[in-house]
Image (cartoon, rainbow, N blue to C red; front, side, top):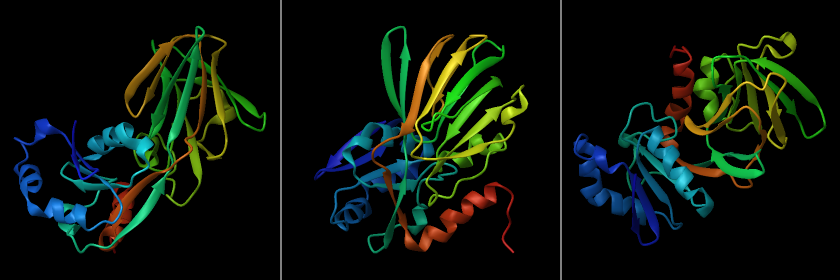
Length: 261
């Protein structure tokens, strides 16, 4: 991914896609991009691409606490505006989404990372894994199966939904824990959690190999670990055009099979 700075604003795009996507190249070379940036009083991060480009841009820049304006030059573009809906006169609203902060302890070492969509804990060798999950209020449960998925509202429309998990409205301060092929019947269905919970996860019992991914990127694999998951202190700020807002919301529902009347 390439980042270009314009008067302390940032433009992010995948440079290798310029040749295969003439509309992206034309937009980068047009006056519209500069006019769009100049229409904001606040410094912004413009993301040109698809959801993958947006995820990489957020992870590169989330600590700057600047709003992200995504323009879709990819496929689904759940987190981005349509190209046709954007011009210097567009009115934008800001939507805030939480991030997941991950802290992993193993063999005396600590690793940290940020997830926008989800944290995926899965079996690493095809064998069942046993996970102890503890919450802030000292409640705990053991799950044996293929693993679990912890999703944010932004991530709830993807892998979580395909596992039968609920879609979380962006206005709901919650995460969802979705079990994957659980063997023990204690947690057969997804569970919504308040986003102020601190979730601790240990690989126990069988101690078979487990793999940890965040946003489809491999983070760690081990047969013994202690993982802490909590909401990151700041939300990401997404700018959505007012005229595109209804389309943006209905896109999520249409992916689940809801049709326009």
